[in-house]
Amino acid sequence: MNRNALRTQSSRLPLAALLFGLLLPLGGHAEEVAPAAPAAVQEQPAVATETTAAPIAGEAIPAAAQPSQAEALKARLAALGAEATSEQIEATKQEFLQQNGITGPEAEQLLLAVDEPATGNELVEGDNAILHDLSPMGMYNNADKVVKSVMIGLVLASILTWTVWIAKGLELLIGRRRLQRELGDLKGARSLNQAAEQAHAKHSFSATLIEDAREELRLSAGCREKEGIKERVSFRLERLVAASGRKMSQGTGVLATIGSTAPFVGLFGTVWGIMNSFIGIAKSQTTNLAVVAPGIAEALLATALGLVAAIPAVIIYNVFARSIASYKAQVADASAQVLLLVSRDLDQPAGERAQAPIAKVG
Image (cartoon, rainbow, N blue to C red; front, side, top):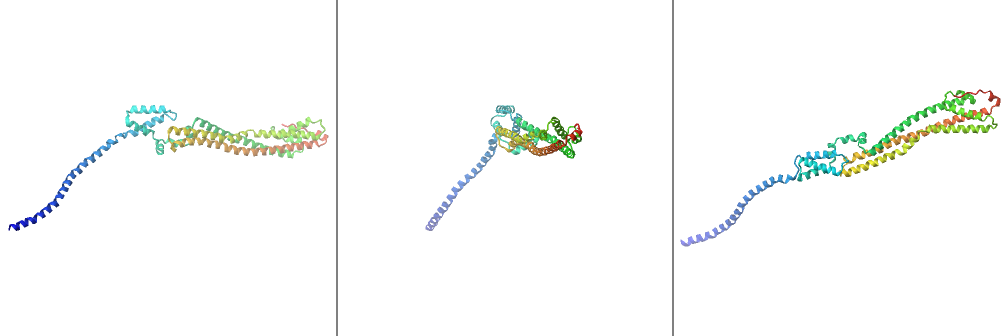
């Protein structure tokens, strides 16, 4: 009986040892797992601490009112104008900071926001006047004094061009029609005296030709050589033709001058304006197109005005050159007709020339 009990107990000992060996690791893991739970609980306040610490890190960011302060400072700096020096700009910034009690990092952030170049959208939205400045009158008002003087000179040159066109055009039109009518009268006359009777207009050019020819005939009354008389009359008439051409050409020289110099004057204004635009770029420290474009547009307006003045001047000058050449040809025809009448009178017998009535021209 005792032996059976001992065998039973001895057989249970290895089983108990096996169970104890299995339970021992589980107990160690349980102890390790059990403390881990509080650690996870302790990590949650850390997250909360970091979450609450975020606003502390953001305290260096300017206050919510800083954008309005930056706009106010920008407006004050813009009121100084483009001619303000760096000393004036710096003094204005420091005065603004003192008035608003802005110091430390907040002041630095504000100055950085003010000095940061504005984008094109901000310029368009913040200053709608730029759109109006792109009109010709707006660009003229914003232009430099030198560019303004160039623009005024080119506008006056354009006005002078159209004035000459109207005045000289009317003079040529009237003169050519009058000569055409008088040339028909000269062709119908049979003698110099008859042509003088038909010269009704007191200051007509044909009357001037006839009177000059008759004056030479009176001065050469004692001469026997008819060919010499004809040559002297022809020389007088040629001088009158040349004088009429010079008189009709008066005023057209200014058209040639405007046509040749106006583009270069406009180009000078453009170069000057672009130079000022580059200086403005250097002062504003930005190459944004919204800042650069108005100055360049003002400069190019000078070149446009130069072309507006030059192109019509060149065209009108060429038209007048052809019209004046046609007018001189008509005068030459009238002069040749008067010389023909002089030659006809000289070839007549002396008695018939004496009987011919002498008409007073004018």
